[in-house]
Amino acid sequence: MRNQKINDNPDFGIVIMAAGKGTRLKSKRAKVLHEIGGQPLLAHVIKAAQQIVAAEHIYVIIGHQADAVQAAVEPLGVKFVLQAEQRGTGHAIMCARDQVASYQNILVLSGDVPLIRKETIASLRDFHLGKKAAMTILTAAPSDPFGYGRVIRAGGSDRVKAIVEQKALSKSQQKEREINSGIYAFATRPLFANIDRLKTDNAHHEFYLTDMAALLVKSRATVVALKASDPAEVLGANTLAEMASLDATMRARKCADLMATGVSIYRPETCLIDNDVEIGADTILEPFVQILGRTRIGSDCRIRSFSVISNSQIDDNVLFRPGCIIDQSTIAAGAQLGPYTHVRPGSEIGENAHVGNFVETKKTRMGRGAKANHLSYLGDSDIGPGVNVGAGTITCNYDGAHKHMTVIEEGAFIGSDSTLVAPVRIGKGAYVAAGSTITEDVPADALALGRSRQTTKEGWARERRDERAKAKAGK
Ligand code: UD1
Ligand code: CA
Image (cartoon, rainbow, N blue to C red; front, top):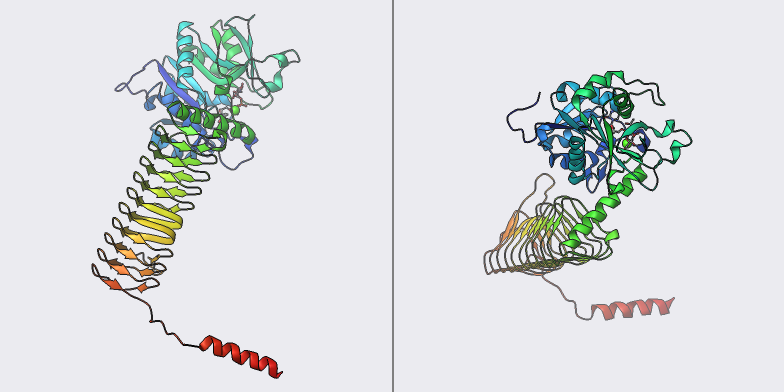
């Protein structure tokens, strides 16, 4: 039952319907777990709801793949209602009755209408209270109303006579362009006094919540409609094509928000930026960049094309040349990466460090001003400030069973094509000769050569050529 302790808005609970299967998606995954803007549909709806009431007053109705849906959004702190058998949107609300009947009003949102904004939910709530309505329907007039329930008003007034589902529309009703968004406010007393009168005499043999409109009108209660100013906000996702268009809308919104705060995005329609990403002013994103998950990027960075940055922290003034892949790592101010650098989880790239083309790092710390400019694998390593890692250097961090650390202390110089067999430590200021295989620690300021000495045979090539020429002539 309702928690009386922390109760910032005791008059309203929010119910989110998310038990349906989403047959029209033709997907194994529950519809509300499909993602737009990098998050499940349901998470977007819950986040909007949380800006209206506290999570403890939000009730998510789950059914199809209930465990997976619950697990995906449980961290948001909401409550759950099980609708074991999905017998329609009206039945979903019947299932929530015991938990929400003590609120004076409830707002009902759809788990598959994810672009809804808190301002719109708040204006629905206020309009509903102002009209003292039993039911208030949020509507919209999109250019193509096909597939949605239509709201039939009483002669152009606020008053609604009924909601008619697409399949039940008469010829003349098919011209109605005002659609039901699937988002409502209800006064709980008339709702639950009438909800058992819903019938299943319709195309799907389900209890339709939409039929509450006509039922309440019949019982002389007030049913009104409020039209959303932006139809894009209440569009649903019943097919993967619709899902893609909601995703595009959400990402366009995100790019517009970022550009409004001083981020330059060239050809924003080619960039994929998840909803939770933060980017500082004067950072420039070139075309075909992806910034995903909980990534935070500072100011004055430049991210060139085809870079994909996920769940990472980037300071100011960082340059990503084309094609960098960065995951779960931190990059300090002034660093320069790429082209084609692969920074794998747990890497920390220091201030003004350079990590160049075809260099892969994993759980590796690069100190201030350290450089690894070409063709290297640096795994499980701690690389000090000012170290120079030559082209083709490989840390051999894995012996087939365990991972081992490589430590390269400040100012050391690793010659090209060296293999550093971990665990191993290269001391401060030491040199490793090019082409070395280093298996033992190198003390500070030493030179280590881990390769066989060169043998040179004078005249060998000329003699070989002469012999061949003789053999050919003799044939
Ligand atoms: C519903 C409305 C329609 C409206 C449209 C807006 C009905 C009968 N129709 O149609 O008027 O224009 O939304 O998007 O309500 N759900 C449950 N339990 C169920 C059935 C559905 O929780 O038993 C959930 C679904 O997971 C979904 C939401 O309710 O999140 C809406 O269900 P859906 O089947 O998508 O309804 P629509 O056909 O879109
Ligand atoms: Ca729907």
